[in-house]
Length: 87
Image (cartoon, rainbow, N blue to C red; front, side, top):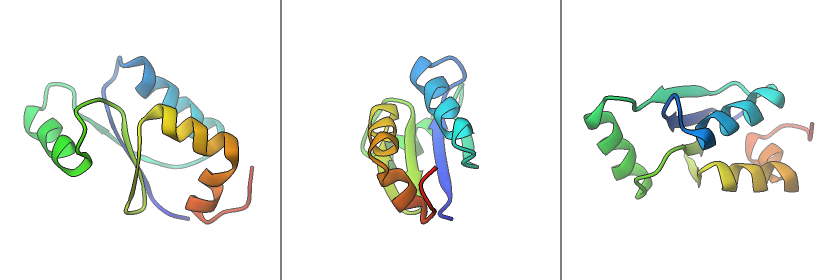
């Protein structure tokens, strides 16, 4: 299964929703907190081209934020990206 990486903050409602969605589907992910770490947040902005959180990758593919994650999950495409059978 492809590695999932989430850059986010502790209190962002979209970050919390993304974590819950991933957890509800038993998807392991690396949770990188950009709270109070300006350099790490700048790195996230540089590699994603966006300044909002969460920013999520599946493998090397940047999928965007929570809205894009939820759309992929609802369409079944998330499982395809993860290279696993639909849940």
